[in-house]
Image (tube, rainbow over all chains, first blue to last red; front, side, top):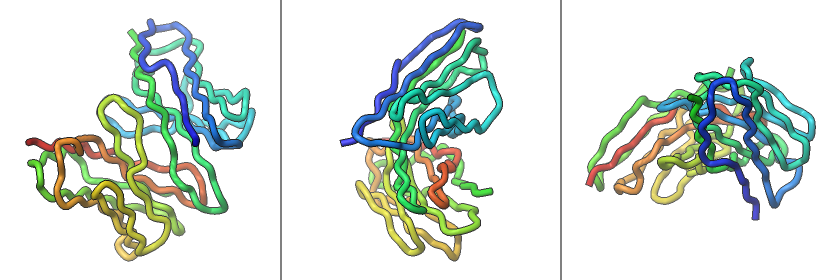
Length: 115
Length: 111
């Protein structure tokens, strides 16, 4: 069966420090991968998505970046964190068959607090 | 572009009450529609989905019917439980592209 792992679960980082969040998927190949951010009490904001190794699309300009070094690995990074980067970060994957999207499977999330 | 609008919360109900969370969408074609649920401190879980008009998605006592004529996908449950307390997200995906989420509706069920 397919599983998605996301870590760490919680993270407290000082302003200006770097960030690396990792997400891996098991049990499927060539998934579409996504990074979302959920600010406190708010909806989901799509940050990045990837349809293949090395292919990254950014939805919003910011000091975050994403990379996909392997088929089932998706990394969210920052060189210098801002206070506004605090939030709940969610990784997700999906498999697209034809023109139908069968839904996303989400990781358990990383709660990032920048202090 | 495609978008989803869902009723603002929070919604507070007593146990065994009837639940409706409204969701309407805007799309150029024929999207797939979804409801996700997020329990406190967790990621989102797919609750139910519908891929074409008049389809009814159902799971765990929740139902939603894809209404193309009203561009709606309202979530309903006949008798809510305390364990249903969570944030519910309506979402759509068109042409297999990335999913668009509503802002989420927080539901609190009191015993």
